Image (cartoon, rainbow, N blue to C red; front, side):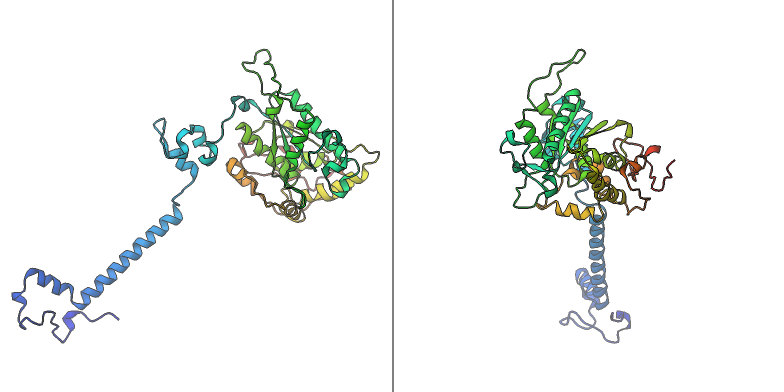
Length: 408
């Protein structure tokens, strides 16, 4: 409880006892000020004022920290360092270009990248999804199971199909000097399998088979510079854990290599997965159907009915229910396919796609059919946000959700 004001006190309090009782008129000005400040009520009020002042300052500082983080974002900080047409030396940005400063990518990474200018001319993504891991021992035995890490169901001749996928991807690459071939697939096999990504093993196999020579390609008539050789237009995407990520992450990898997003996409994979990639994954990413091509190559077997039935049950329908694979059972598969605890880097290299990377739509209800052919004109749900290849955020009519579409 605060003390009573000094005017109400019944007792005269003397703070200079050596002075006579009637001494106020004899005090110096400094002594009078000290006596006034030392009165109990004023001393208490001053302490309260100081406490409130400190509390207010602390509150302002905390609000400033919460609402305006000191780091802000690396992009805004970096952009502020480019002033009057000059890069101001602050460490990482010593040699940064204006494009790098505004890219949204941390400069500690951006300033380590120097692309051949011809990469920026590429606009066609050719993607080959991985299915197994080639150990790289003997290219002459590539069609034999012993040199591969396989699931039990893959030991009936599937490795020959994987080689065909790689070969066809290179054939498509040769047809288009503005194409980039991306092998996609992470280190999905549990120990004692080595932490070798499927994509890297495919890339190694392509080189072992001499499919990606470094031979210079002459410039065509009207071209000012020769295109990049095949070996420089083949890359790996080493983090995808399922087919949806094969497509999405390959687009992100294309951006890393070329500094732009593809205008065209060609996928070379299993024929039975064409509906999954074209109707579901492509649609989920809102990529234009007119610029998307799927090349299907199945196992060389007389009867593929079980393969198509398995694709419908374990691939197509689950992805219809969960377009990005963020719900079980697809999310459980991703968990099991990441035994080496890998984090993909595309949030950093592709900040434009952050919302897409984190997109997890609710489980979908749809009318079910008994055959993949019955889903020919049925498309999955699409991301509705803004994307670099769909700047207005709109979705084409043929890409709308049609779960209950009545067939003619």
